[in-house]
Picture 1 (cartoon, rainbow, N blue to C red):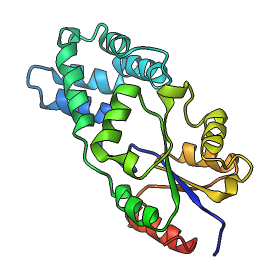
Picture 2: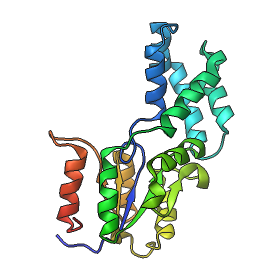
Picture 3: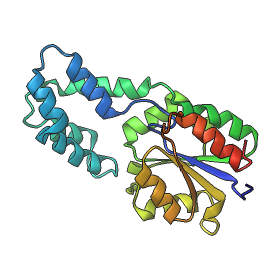
Picture 4: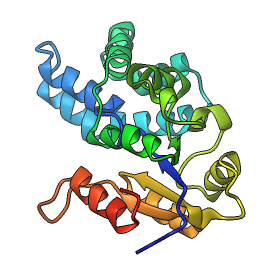
Length: 220
């Protein structure tokens, strides 16, 4: 199968970088012997989880600050006094993050002359820490972080923004979008892009499936 794809747009979390802020927080909770099992369950599945999701939805589009995010997330949790400690742990997790297997494709694709870009739902502080840690700027341009532009996936407007940023607003079919969340993949397809879900399935790893997909397009 031949295509006219000349631009490949990557998500960060779950594609290029391992981990995420919730994983870091939950791991800290479970390893911390001073936190009760009941509080851990409440934080992961109860009202505290709802607080965090609400704060995160505002934070990732720049509608609340770093301090406001933690204030809202830890309000009435019993661990608000440890905000600075938890915030530092999350920062360390992002600034020292490990690459996900999708990173292996960047040098190969760059060498073949494809334009590479990033489109990520992320906040300024953590998103750019990951960019620096993985040196994504050496491969990808532009790097679009949702909090910088006040838009988020899977809303239509952010895909239109990305297409304009890579100069493919009139030729979205020339873009391949790679994300680990199916709702973001489907939205990219609705915007006219080719799109691929970076997920393990049917006994095959995400990177193996992506390699086959790229070979199918004669990209690799």
